[in-house]
Structures are given as structure tokens and as C-alpha cells.
Length: 341
Image 1: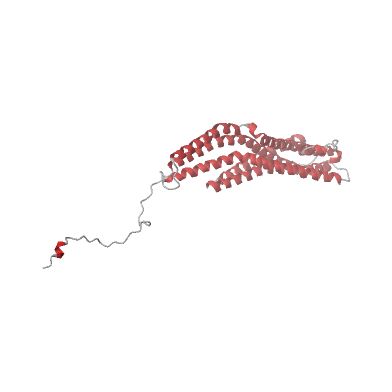
Image 2: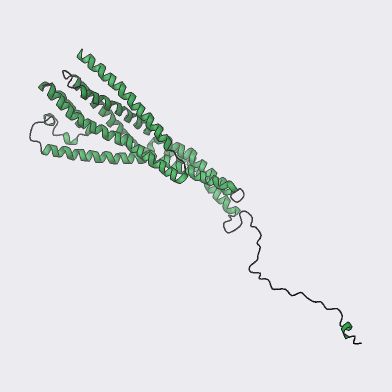
């Protein structure tokens, strides 16, 4: 028997296997939160945190003190003071016109007296808005830099240290951005509104001066303006001085008869209404338009809808105007009754 097969001993047979491609594994271990190229090192987080804390401290103390000081808004305050002087001058002019109308015999000046009462109520609302703007000018600066900016920075610091460790941490970043956007809007609301108001006022003064210059050049008959003793210095007068002179001329026209006096006062009343309309636009409508624009921007960047507060503010202003108009109308009627008696 051939025993060669037994002499060779046991042989190990390796199973046939295919070579696996190590470059494309079928399974990857799950990555831990914060891994990857966007992972921020501990040192970087500390540096960013220090910078944000410094920014919050600078905003809460030096910047808050600066933007809450009236001296910071010197130009804006001059604009608001000019609006206030214009509104007070218009009230005085309307009062002078009311006295002139009350001196007219009969009921010729009754419609004009009613219009003067309406103007007085509107001017009261204008003055209230101007005073509110002066109050909010420094108050908004203090709120923005003392409270909103540090709050937004604090939320962003929390997001910086909780990102990758807490899944809802993104909410902190979103709210931090919202606080910063609202702070910027509050700090610039009244200055932007005052700048637009000054531009509109300058344009109105220029157009009014050009119109009066054209009327002076084309005048061929005697008018109320030509009877003014200060005709040579009229070009240097502002709108209130021109209106006051015109109303005074209307009062002097009483000597020529009631109808002529009513016509003269009515003509100047039209100019007074025009000046009041411009005052309402610059003191009320322009700030309201800027406020609506800011609300739209806040909604665009933060998603917060604040337009409901505008409706409430409009209702409050309308109620104040109606009450002031009723009170002024009653005062005019009592004055006319005492004058006629």
C-alpha cells in the first residue's frame, strides 16, 4: 500500500475570500456632536466670549451714556425745536385770526371760525407728537444700548457654548440677533425721522419763497401784502412771520367792511391751512411712515409683527385730536358769544 498520503501530514486549506475594498467602507461610526471641520476649539470660544463680553460692557456703559445724552442729538433737537416753534406760531396765528373773525359783524365769519377750531385741534396733536419724539430720542438710546444689546450678546454667548451640546441652541442665536436688530432700530428711529422732516421743511420753505417772489413780481394792483409796512424785509421773514403779517393785514381790512374783511381773512386762512398741513406731514406722517418702515424691517429680519401697535397708536392720536378739536370749538364759541354780547 502506498503510504505517501499519510506521511505528508494534515494540510490546512484556507477558504477562498474576495479582497475587500478598504477605501469604501459599508458602515461608518456616527460622529459625535461638534465633530467635523466646523468644530470650534476651546481656545477660540474663550477668545470670542471675551470679545462679546467686552462689547456688552462697552454698550451698557459708555455707549448707553453717550446715546442717552441730549448733547449727542444736538442737530435732531434743533429740528424738533423748530417744529415746536412752528406749531406754537401757527397756534398764535390761528388765535389772531379767530380774534379778527370774531370782530366781523354778523355771521360772515362763522365758517372761518369753524375751520380755525379744527386747525387748533390738529395743532394740539402735532405738539403732543413733537414732545413725544423729544422724550423718546434719549429714552430709545438708553434702552437700546443699556438693555437690548447686552441681552442679545448674552444670548449669543450662551449659543456659542451650547452649540453641538444642546439641540435647541439655535433658538438662542436667533433671539440674540432679534435683540440686536430691535436695538439698532430704536437707536436710529427718531434721528432718521427728524432728518427726513428737515429735508421736507427746507423744500417747502424754498417753494414758498419762490411762489411769493413770483406773486410779488406779477402784482399790478393793491393787495393785502402791499399794505404791509415791512415790505422791504419780507423776503427775510420765515413762514410764521409772513402768516402773522398777513393775518394782521386781514384785521386792518375791517375798516373797509365786513365782507372785505372776511374775504381777506379767508384768503390768509388758506395759507394758514397749507402751513398746518405741512406741519402735520412733517411732525406726524413722516414719523409714522418711518415707524412703519422700521416695523417692516424688524418683521423681515426677526419675524415679529408689530404693526398692531401702530393701529392702537393711530386710534389714540385720533381720539386726542377729536377731543382737542371739541374743546377748542367750545372755547371759540364762548369767545364769540362774549364778544357779541
